[in-house]
Length: 428
Image (cartoon, rainbow, N blue to C red; front, side):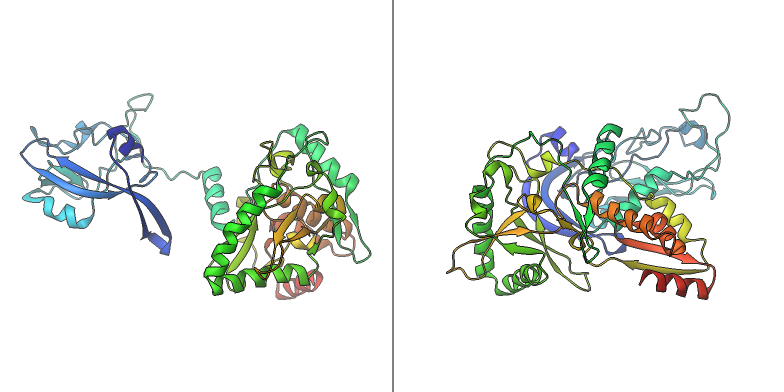
């Protein structure tokens, strides 16, 4: 994308899915037409390129002195600065690349790269010498190849792989963290069924929201047109909402409830997210806590995110590998297992109707809601509280809750079959 901007290329709108390694898909939205010129002969090549945010990391990974390769003199290289770590701007497909190959080829021994002539100049491919002198080295010592264990990078990549339906857990300042944690400790209770009732951690009671009903209504009318046009889509959407109603996770509001001032309520627009790989719910309704009200503030703008109270994922994965026997599990609808107070449910209102001939109905979501920034903090705090409350009776299970949960996913184990069965029993 950056390369296209530098050249001032005209972007053409399109939708092109590309299958990548490990069956991952990438949706491309733009393409550009590019003319390549040879540096050494009268040759041009017209190609159409899909536009990506970036192709890969800089190549080579480290700059090195090319003199160590003992290349032939007066070699017209397609990239004279091949040894300098830099961006990769264009990736040619096989249909172009094979037409560029010329007959001249220099094959050195196995420790040196192959030198191949192309219409754009000579290119190098294959093995590099085991020992290279890197440009950024502080002295002239010989560098060797090392495997670097970047825990931070690896942990980030694993988290992206595992986080399917949870918001990213973002750290706040220690002051914000302490306020958020104190709010949970002082205001969280459990009802007679043992279910947690929490309050949303507001940044300040003085922050007032504007009107959010009009935006939610416009968004729903747009959604309704899609529901009318696609009966299968409507069926899946209605099933999801009706489950919310049947389980008591949301309830219809009466005329008295609708008299509450705008500053004390918030209407969440909602839309569908599809996940074809899901074995249970392929269509999931997502609520937009970041939608702006009339004064420019969203519900998420008024909420604290909360600190991360669980172990980091990298440590959990490492600990998982030491067990002789392992067990994995997750918590069904973890957010919806936790109730919010009556006052805070007014900040989680939605609009819905089953039949287009009916009037729009107003509902309040009674549980912690995916789409609000504090949802992960509240859910994981409840898990930690369960472990603290039951540690005397179930020490092993509670230890696993504290150390081996990542949001609602559990990966833990034990050293024997008896221990793993007991651990399962304790959880149940």
